[in-house]
Length: 382
Image (tube, rainbow, N blue to C red; front, side, top):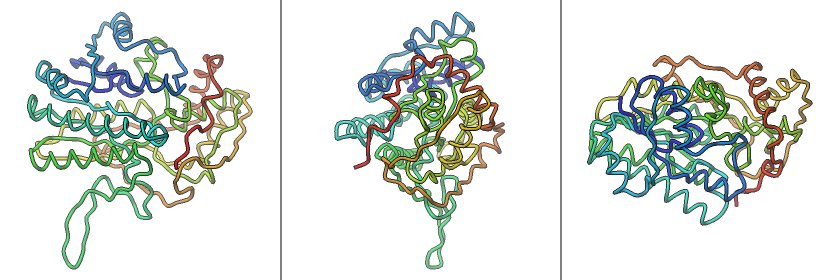
């Protein structure tokens, strides 16, 4: 397939590009380095050295023989993006091109404005570029389980059947995001659903849980191909943060009571899920929502897992509960359905002790580069 990946420099975008290129797909990636720039401006750079996107593509080609075409540009520039679609005529577009940090979105007016403007505008432009230039293109949009919040009922896979006063209908599952970033993802879903039912687009919306890990088949070929691994309080996901804290000798920072429950998945499973969605496209006029995670844990359970993995390597890992910088429930009911991707053939990589030990060993190789000043919370929900 001709596959266009928006946000191809990111933690997920770059591994996705490599994985699909090695499967023989014609891959073009787009990025404007927004995340790199924000990481630099907030002193939140990745742990591992990360060549720029053009250098990455050249290294990948030299090692693997496969090519990835790189375009540097802004998805919020509609006329530029429209031309990209017109020239490339993608059969699938994978949309990662959003500011991905909840803490960043909550840190001030300018950061909130950047998040809202970038995320909603990029999605709106993708929709119109598909409508005008590639109407049969399958849009695969990375959503987030954070759209749902933590309701006191089971979370269905995107949709909810409602009976009221003797009548029934199906609606998008009610969503109550806990940050502005997550709210922009809710707006994305609403935009997509409007254009699906009005113009007959074909869309898969992947409600992804927090991702962890750094190892993929392609990145294992050369450390220069590793994803942009953040461990800071702004861009680092909780598992990746905990792993780096363990290596650095910093107590694991459990926010509040630590009962916050989420669905997690290994980065290798993100690649599986995206490929499964791509190779099993929906028909025109369909919005398919898939909850993309493999396991559910509380923050306390994650901390315990990292403690046990550290012990295997002789690392003493302490845990410290701190005042919660976020506004969220710290103990709550959480049961989310996630059968769709398993039915498509997902073969999960679970968070075993061996997996965590392997990640700790990789991080230990870069221990000298850890900046402890990036770990503790610098942003509070206000």
